[in-house]
Image (cartoon, rainbow, N blue to C red; front, side, top):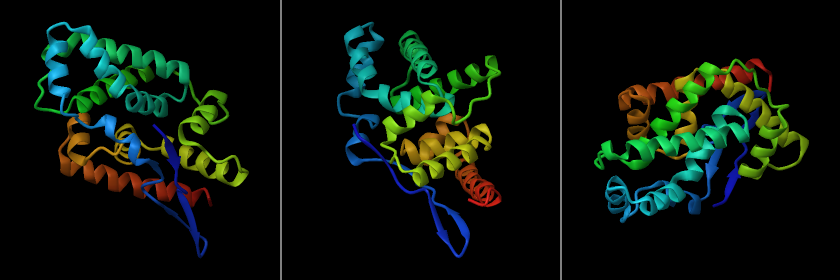
Length: 215
C-alpha cells in the first residue's frame, strides 16, 4: 500500500482556495477497504468462532482503520492501542453483525466511537510540534521535505482541527478513505443528504479558516 499527498492549497490573485481532495490514496491502496468476494464467507466463519477467518479480515482492514484513527488522535502509540480495542470489540460482537452492510462501515463506526471515548477521557491539546505526528504524516503520506510543503500541510492540518467532530470525520472518510456518502452516512448515523451538507459546510469553513490565516 502506498500513499501520496496532493498539493492542498493553490494561490491565485492572493486568494487561498481549498481543494477538497488534498489527501488521496493511490489506486492500489483502495482495494483492501472494499468488499471482496470472499468477505461474507470470512464473516460467517468468524461469527462461528473461526479466529483464522477473523485474522484475514483484520489484516485486510487494519491499515485504513489505523490511518483514520491516527489522523484523529495525533499520536502513533495511542492510535495503535485504540485499533487493538477496535478489533477486539469487533471480534467480541461480530456475531451481531449483519452482512447487508459493508464490514468496513461497521468497523469505521466502532473506530469513530472509540476515538470519541478517547477524547472524552483525554484533556490533552496536541499540536503539530508533536514529533510522533510529524513523523507519521511523513511516513504515511510521503510528505515532501521542503519547508514550503511542510508549512502547507501544517496549516491545512491546523485548520482541519478547528472543525467540529462530524466535519472532520466526513472530510477524512470522504477524501482520505475514499468512502461514499452512503457509507459515511451509516457510520456517523445521519442521512446521506445531511452528510453532503456537512461536507459542503466543512469545506467552506476550512477555506474560511485558511483565508483568515492569510495562507
